[in-house]
Image 1: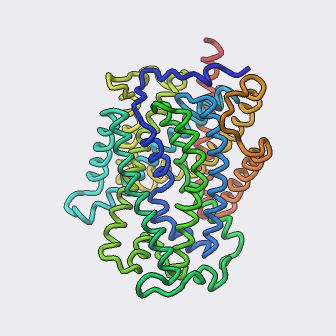
Image 2: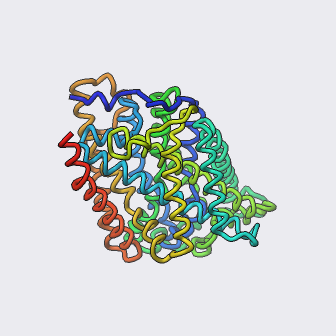
Image 3: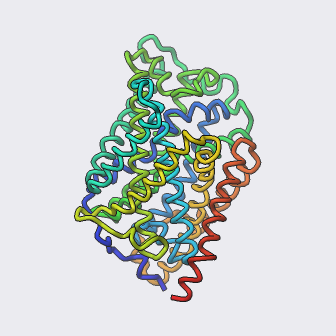
Length: 458
């Protein structure tokens, strides 16, 4: 029987004040982060021109997971999204585990983005210590989230708009440039294979998948945000259907242009390859503009990270997986205690980044390294169980279906397992896998020792 709690629409005091335009831009911007603007250079350096394949393979995995999530979210829109689907499909242990893993991941991201944002601001205000700038960013975005969900939505709408517009301009200018139609440019499409497309070997392509898979994490936020929208089913269906072309255009398309515009060996690793590409276009002030966009991307992730962590914590307490006092909602429908608790951990992590960067902060950031893969695996397993139940008891709810079920779902689980095994084989990311497994084991241990006995005795 399908658990009715999986299809409830009760918002527990939250306001459904987000419009469709908010969700669509959050979905669009959620896939464009600083990891694309800056991290793509390191991926290209590792893989070579075949980094395009790494981004395509990683994007394919995300597209499949989002399709599964879209199927569940349109059939049963609910606060907590995949945490609820895991709980009702696989059991309390799965809901508890995926919920706390997700919260832990985003708390770490919030701290990391605050530190990165401070590093970007520091050259402009060198007299202000970086840790102070980090705290200022944290305070500012915490205030935005505390005002109202509409305030969060508007802030994220405009931050995401800047990122999307920048990428669209790059795609247009880059296409004209590589075709030799730009003033002073020559036809340079051949750069992508000038020294061999798979220049560093096929294992490097798989290595690249391990790196890029985390760049895509955040697309699932739209299914969480939908709980506070006025048209959850329609918004989620539209966003998850559009994820395919977003991945192809924003990631695969723009990275392909990068290695066509500039020979891959010359693409910068420590700075934004997009800024370098815009410089080749001869646009005045292009590097400064792109650096501002990178800062915008950092702030956007920080803003959405605070929102996401607080809403997942709020959803966890509704099932008895978090302290009951977290449920408090102010008159504007904002779970203010959940926000403050999430930001408190962020403040501790920011402080740790300056007090003990090689110990505490290193653990916080790296122990979330493989969490995205664990979450994707639980989402896929949840969809397998939930789809079969819905087909038997409520097929009319399946308005958006996973392709070639159950074969692609099982294939996704196999690919996730392969990526995890590959992480163990690559020395530079092995520590992330190890620490992520420690985090997973710690959460499961808490459930076994404390949560399960209490729920059995209740």
